[in-house]
Image (cartoon, rainbow, N blue to C red; front, side):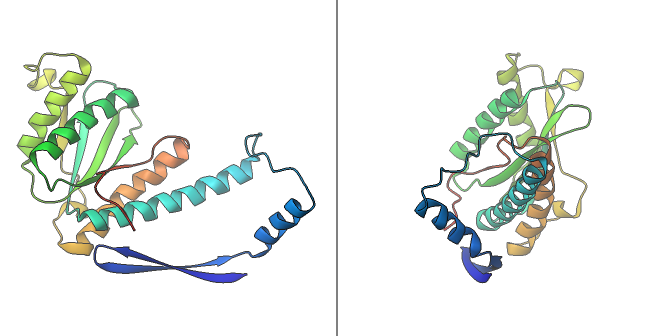
Length: 217
């Protein structure tokens, strides 16, 4: 085994990751190639234990990526976007895509990191960490408009039982505004919890969403 160190620049800081690497695996792969052995087929039925191991590894990678993205985006506020109707994932993402495009067009510094959580009732809702102040009433009106467009409903259906959904501030410590890395890390932990849940339930789906201009080196 060898210890390998990875240095990740993020939000003006440097994160260090140390892991042990089994050097026998690449050596065995080189030996198979030298002896002309056929390549391993990864599309065949996978052993349940291997699949679980892959899920756990993917969960850890996704959680780490969410944490870094939240730090780089400087998220310091948390919101939950809900729906009244039972929407499938594609329709929910259609509404969210319109929402984020309007936000990006009107607020040049708009940045977010989000994930979809399936509720036990079957409803899907979005947890999103955002940077900067956003009036929740304005977010709610825009979310209503985007949901109504996605559902093909009248834009006047926004009150009471006609409302297509809501925007809430989660009742968690992460809702309190913290500055800098501390706030981003607190919100990242909240989002990552649902990323892990999503990975376990649906391994091949997109796990999280984020602003395109937020990139990691």
